[in-house]
Image (cartoon, each protein chain N blue to C red):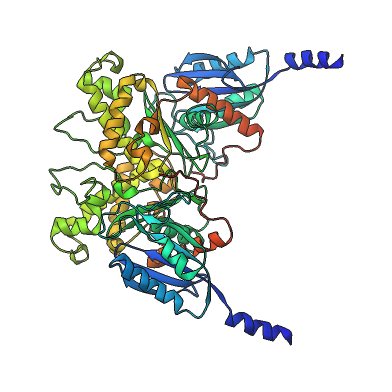
Length: 317
Length: 317
């Protein structure tokens, strides 16, 4: 039976997609095509050379044929294919990574197409395909961890625009009498990231956020800043849902506090069930948990193969 | 020559599009197909019945055949065709207009297709077709007048999402020692609209904004709040350009102050020429001046005829 032989042949040559979730704390590398067959490994984000070499070693050691790699990266990054800095991380404060070309070494070493987008754009693509944003055309994935960043779907496509969104740098009300902490952002001081990222919490309270008890006032303050950020996203993008991931959101009680505060701040101005009665549905954890970014990077890889790459239409910087 | 007779016939039966820019202060009605042939009339926004009847009289008195009407309305409005409140203005604080059905009386009286969107979505469509956003796929039109609102193009289409953007209600830093004014928004107090709309300026300074001299400190404060709003829009939507219209922006010196403040607030974090060296191009007045909204409503009418209506895909409230 020739069919049997072909099946065996296909199994040996099984084609896979590769993904890199390039984060400020760790790089997650994955190979697979969906949540069921995904295999991952992770490496701490140290110097660019050491980190990228670890990733390349992981892909070289795979027995499957990798057809394309998707990279979802921390940023800001240059996404414009015609820009001299395409594929680079640009102005990050992270030592060693500013102006680092992340795409070229991967493409050269592995000889396959490489798709490149922000880590959070990858995450919302993953959530739209397999997670808590399935069937939605307008949704946001927000990560609150080492930094704060967001990826948004509008009309079913990730937003790029001129560069790409940088929602961690939203400016928010900051009542210095309630919270005299000046913020940690080296560019803006008390922007959303400067007030509410994991490092901001640690700097304000002197201990890692995860060690603070549930009834510590830190959490109400954190919920207040995150809710202000969510309200600003809600009035600008009018999303159907906002998913909150990242290290700081590994506190389930924080979701409840955020929903209450978002309801209070919106004050029923926008009359839609989701924003009044169903904030439990409007604000959710990611359906893919911590795998949204790496699974989304497979979607990026797939889009590149299909020729429907993220559709970046911005302008060279 | 049969051609001559046909031309005469066509002239008599010339088909036109109708537009209504339904604003909180005035209704502008227009008939035409482009900036060259547009004819307009305007009526003060009084009670819904009186205002809409004035508009209907204008269209009935036209000798041309009107094929469709586009309405760009102040809001919030219900844009979902399947919602029982489709075509209504919903939660406006404007007396008499909350829960008013603006679409049905126009459709019934004139018997033509009626397209319905926000006034600012109409304006960015007009600017993209004939004005200062031509050729751009990601751009924002912001009006600063009786209220503050914004329409955004993403991937060349206006953003609707769950409801529609309400960027006048962005929450911003508000230094009460510098500006103890509590804000005028009945829902949120010191949101962008509460701090920086025309009525907010008048309430803070005791005189209409337009009567304040150029060197009055009001303008630096106004530029500060508007710049904070623009920065929040820039980090969320990553637009290629932001156009500023409305009554408050009829002060040319305000553009210079806003550009300086946006540059200072962004602090070169996002490394793109437009946001560092070309803020004069990034922040501009509308190319169509005060006609952006009414011309954009013709684009709405045209989209309805072409069957490519604004593509609303949101959910009933």
